[in-house]
Image 1 (cartoon, rainbow, N blue to C red):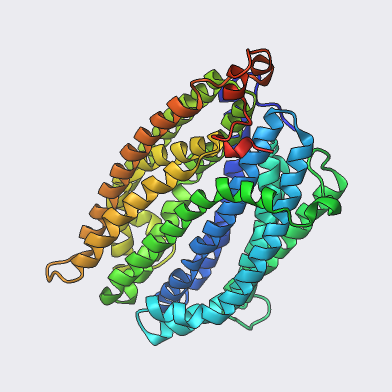
Image 2 (image 1 turned 120 degrees about the vertical axis):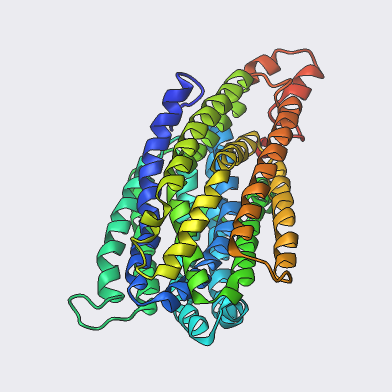
Length: 475
């Protein structure tokens, strides 16, 4: 375990965020490598991959419930130096991971075709997306175990093992993709089937490697069969913290699905251009997301230790750093957006749609950085509902006008992108207001446990990290 309650906060964030960024870059290469080779198959294949890949946002929503709940509870337990509670949370999260994997496989195979028929612009896109999903679903199911183990380590301030595993498995995926998708060496290209297969194999290898690490090297949080049997009180604690962030990702799934549904009348080129542009945008966000991911355990451990001053300092450091990064990314997307898209498609309509998407949507990058940071702070403080409320407001403000636009004859794709940029800015402002309100509620009486213990009766109870108003620290 790394103690994040002492020492330089910027140094802690940098130490955690750099390897997280490296890991996220390699993780994103899963999708970019597949996108590159699928892109050689034409815009219909790209559209099928994009529509089917949107399902990943739904799975990410569910894994976020597990990951954020596990990370936040273990971070606060680590701040209190409570190893027993950290181990209980970790092992209970493994049980939740098994349940999530089973549901993903059962529902995924049963609903793949109805889902694709909702979003696909034509039958070819639907068939391609279903084929991809059937081979991609095992990898999605295995993500639950990977998230559980990685989040437990992040809560203790340890990220390097997770990064090493991610890098190794992405390299494996990069080797497998040209073989399975394009038929290199074998002469037997499998197209979208190969894209799903290569990713599923790579995720399976990642789970094996992480398991080996926990068995042989990890000492603070460990596998314990006596703690794996379901304990509903522990599940409730994880879900209380994790469900709102999961809801945020579910709303992202709704956002992506709404866009794909709204633009399907513009044909496969529009869906392909949006698919490429949105994946490139996700890749550009990686440095900012890494800092946000690092912010949560740093602030969380200091929350558990009762260090309100360091919680506030963590937020200031993160939001200033993120703002600088996002402004740089905005300038880059205003300069040469087509250059980014052309690396994945040589079809002019696809490039035009993707470039226009990036140029307009980049206006919300700064606001997105604020949203990322605020969400991490809500996780650290053990109350993630405000982040969900801000995301819900954004989706409401976006989805209703977007559907209305489809009934207007003058509707153009750029109108949708401008609407998206404006609604993210409104989300950032609302999220910041909610965070300041949470500061007053959570940090006003926060003190280190030893200080609370020496307070007069009644005062200590109000200041205790075990207060009922702070569900992430109960038990």
